[in-house]
Image 1: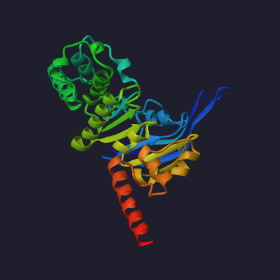
Image 2: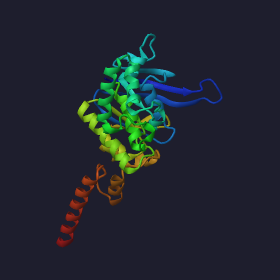
Image 3: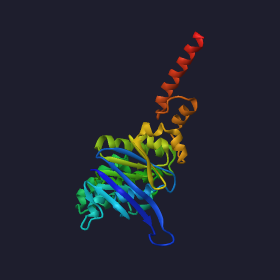
Image 4: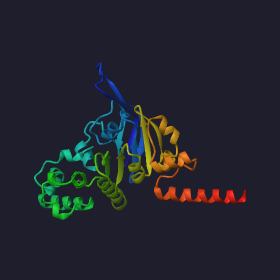
Length: 285
């Protein structure tokens, strides 16, 4: 499933004294099966962008196309679209409401028209996919830990079998264990199900772990778009728009070493090689 934005702008409160231009002439495309990170400072338009992709918002100007279908066209089935382009909001556990975990995750498939037995099969599959233990299926979701609740909320979207999964700050407020668990499941879902994953985050380590491509927004415009390595290697350009880079990348930058390093393992190897070369030079001198 492809998503394309053509010269899209979006205004909040248009025509009023409170008018705000959230997006300004954004053009981009995301192909089927990609893993994309979207980042930018607060107010850059990240959340607006993904809500346009899901059809929750309509552009003030320009076009949003999903598999070539213009979401603003009369007759477009937005309900069907939102089943294919699943959006997990920040703090999605606030939307849990059923008495049991299983019932909550069943809600989406049942709302799509699946019979109860099929909806339960889909819900169980989704819960297993995000690592929720079966012994929790019949417990109240409000008795779970923060990380478990987040997984249940993600399962609720996943149960509708989307082709594209958009996650807006999925690790916000979680402790390191919960954060690592969620990120690991997102990576696994992308690899095993081959679904498109779009991750919105201000956490550079999260982006580096999940995404192969990064889109950077600033003041409603796309200012960078490329492979994760190439974008994070532009340390100074990211600093200029108020963003950081993964800690290991920042370390390499401060050491004056190559900045296309985004994992601890890569940094360890690069620093070891640098020290080896430095030691050789010292002995030769």
